Length: 139
Image 1 (cartoon, rainbow, N blue to C red):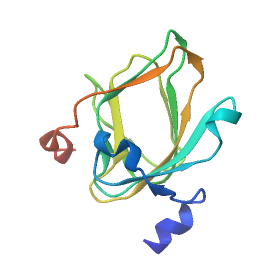
Image 2: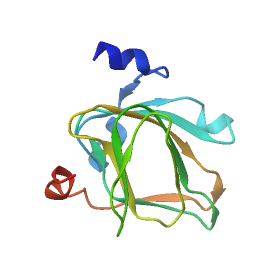
Image 3: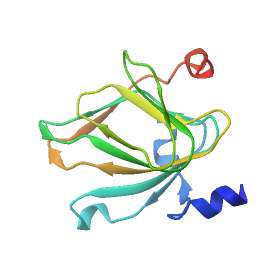
């Protein structure tokens, strides 16, 4: 864990209690900017081993979506109807609005990404069902 902490240059932050109902496992959130005072919201999200968020969709009338910048550890990203993609430091994932997806840590690794909320018109997140344990454990 100490090696992982050294790689977490943006720091782990606090337990992500406000969104805990939308995660399986423990995640931590460290906002990097003040949402009310910047054009983009950036946050460091740290996932304990096995932690992942529920399926969800970023909606927008125009613009919107999310960008993930992978910082440390190993994770997964999956869009509905597609195979899961392994995530490693240095990878960038662009998530278009309207795409049902999930992301999180692998079973045997913590994972960190910077989440960039892309500005748009009438943006919202729709949180859906958890990622099925059988599906996740088969990855």
